[in-house]
Amino acid sequence: MVADLRRIKDPADAAYHCSPMRFVRATRVVPPQAGSTGMREAIGETDFEPQQILGYAPIEPDGSFKLRVPADTPIALTVLDKEGRGIQTHLNWIQVRPGERRTCLGCHSPRRGASINSGTVVDTLPAALNPTIASQHQSGETMASLRTRLDNTRFALKADLEFQDDWADTSRTGVTARAPITIRYTGNANSADDLATPVPTNGFINYPDHIQPLWTRDRGANTCTSCHADTAKLDLRASIAGTGRMVSYEELVVGDPVIDPVTGLPQTRLRDGEPEIVRGPALVETMAGGAVGMARSSRLTEIMSGDTLKVAAAARTTFPGPTGTAPNHATMLNKAEKRLIAEWMDLGGLYYNNLVANGSPVRLTTLSEATFERDVYPILQSDCASCHQPVGSSGAAQTTQSFANNRFVLAGSVEGDYNVTLTMISNVCSGPSNALLRRPSTSPHPSGATAAVLPAGSAKYNTIASWIASGCTTQ
Image 1 (tube, one colour):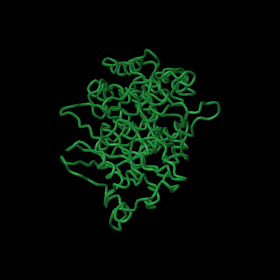
Image 2 (cartoon, one colour; image 1 turned 60 degrees about the vertical axis):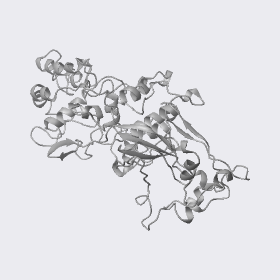
Image 3 (cartoon, one colour; image 1 turned 90 degrees about the vertical axis):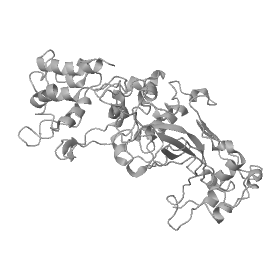
Image 4 (spheres, helix red, strand yellow; image 1 turned 135 degrees about the vertical axis):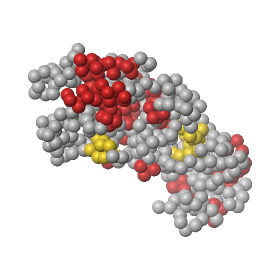
């Protein structure tokens, strides 16, 4: 439905308190340096470019905002709710020349023509507005245009989400102002709402530097990793996976294989001519399907906030949330921590946004795919694929192997099998601890066998262990 701006901007109307759009976030694209390598490893499992947060501006009661951004720079604008979570992801970069003005008209208006905030709508001023400000309104001005004309410091982007209602004339009976909003990394009215972990600098959020510390922060009995430290549920430890990224990152942004309900086997598909395993929803949405806000479409946000947002039904089914004696996750994070996670997700869930940060991207270690193809892949094909593939060695569907709790499915493509093998490696500096070696070296494996497939110390075991250890040399 089209918003009724006459009601929404009237402090005497109940609609004044109903608008979900409260802030706008401005970000800029972070271009890679010429000749840089390791971009995919640094960016992570997303199609988004690295971004830098430039700052925030409040949205006025009539839905307008006005801000100053750097010239000749690809800019993205995201409208946010009161918690700092994006309502919608804008998928086009915009830019302005020095002194140029741009307006959000045309695309964001009904196709009948003019902006919904123009003509008589913009010039209709409710009686319950603060007369000191409203009396200076000029024809055709939005609320944001009026405020910035009276005070040009309001053009400047703020580092934090801050809103104070100056519009409501609270001297009138029945008129109440919108509640103030302040969400800072540090310096909140209640110090318990401040970050106790590293604070992002210059608008850059990096998963290893800023998000991972939230999972390992000592919270007493409710420390995240006191429960989430194994692959059976959710592993949020900071150990390094075979991708060179932390295992917790892979756990959050990569979904489990989709199991066919008839065959009990993982579903596969061809992508650019290569077979790949179909994967279900992840806790964190990193692709902008439908252009819905990334944080508001991620199941992790719903669990950590207790809110019902825009998450797909499949994600809620896959991740039903804590039950029984599990702690209430909606109370585990403070205001600054929830803001930080929302920002990270809204920017696409990248591993690094600052491409020159310590560890990114040239120092980010990835296990060699060439070595995998030469040394490891033949072992997996000869000793593992008979069980760990969607079809049996004869071409018939597997009937003895259940994939319900099995993430390791070999599709027969070197590139695809390399990537899925990396998910079985949670610590390149401790080869025997990884599922890729630990499980096939136990006796019996697979279930019903009389001996281990890859006994510890055997030639094939040592070949795989050597490949894993090669990733630890530059950590």
